[in-house]
Image (cartoon, rainbow, N blue to C red; front, side, top):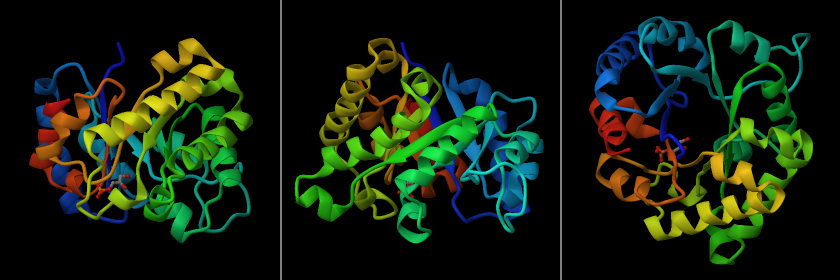
Length: 249
Ligand code: 13P
């Protein structure tokens, strides 16, 4: 059985006061959520604030990106070692906003994944097709290509240490959600791809859905056999919505 996991991706949102209120509410409710994993990925500036607020609870901390290099002359960047030092357990890699707006490529996603693993961070690898790609019937080949380059870089033996997030680009921040059937079909396809490389890994690897998941649709999505959790954007900025999703898991 794969344990469900709900991860909040705050994106470029949040100030200390907001973070403190949100995290206090979530940390206080953690015990009532049952046997699920929960993690919060605030912007870099709030990692320490959030770390303090969730300390002692079962909620864990993650970042939204990292650099592919070790420490050094890379102005403005943040290394895997720095994230580890800041108390992070998780790091999101290859989010579609980074791919579309900041030049993230399959090459950099693969290198960052390796860097995260070498520094004992748990990478959450985002994959997903655009609306045009889905209209053209290319969603499977796009996702397959995104996954392939990561597996080629880290080796099939390390796939057990990654989490995959399927985030159809057309569903992110749009209010449009993949139907449970669409999401399940892609999750099952991803698991098949992993299974063709390594049967056991495919059974244990957690594959999350992301894209306008909220309390009202979480139950149906999380009820699908191959959906092992959610990567939550805007709904993670509201404690009640986020906790509602966690309770549906
Ligand atoms: P929304 O939940 O705001 O659609 O964002 C999803 C997402 O991008 C999570 O990484």
